[in-house]
Length: 289
Image (cartoon, rainbow, N blue to C red):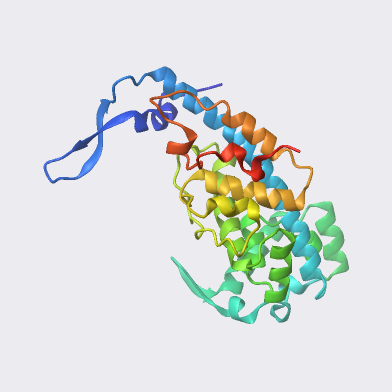
């Protein structure tokens, strides 16, 4: 495995000692803490690589399930319901979307991304087939296949409340807003994994709200006091969702194996660096059937 110097620097950085400057600000110094060594950084790098290889296929499995559910439920309103605001939630669709160079509605912003994705896929056989049949458009159950996960989540966000609730209920969540928050954060984690970014101690982008035990099953109640900024929270959420879309998933077993490889570095543990809760292995979520 290639481990360039500057790539390893992301893994040596947490080993730098803290110092306080003249202004009273605390920051990392150029000096390393006692006991730090390059082999520890290599071990963390290799563990992180293994963690990404465990998480990415699991998130992709969830993504495929979401494609199916969105296509199925939205398709009940018509093959082109995703292109007709009347089949979506007007309040969500008409909400203002502000970007660095535009102001429009959420639906307009989503539709712009969608149209771009369809153009990029216009030589795919299935796209050609359906575009011929539907006057240049692609029915939602097929269109979900060329959507990015972000585009798909954006469409889920704009679905009619009853449709969004049905999908959330199918994955064990009572509130679709809770599911949306999870999916938004998981999409960023997916991209970090796909692009080989450091993830083991990275703070979560778009951290979800704290767990409300009334909104989810018993398996996630141990997250009530968990840090939503750490990777364990999303890992547990992912395991929970996967159990609902694929009862035969091996993710729990794979994750247990991967975490068993966490290196012995400077007294660090999954609990004090990655947000894993004490006794997580004993939780029903991680039981192996």
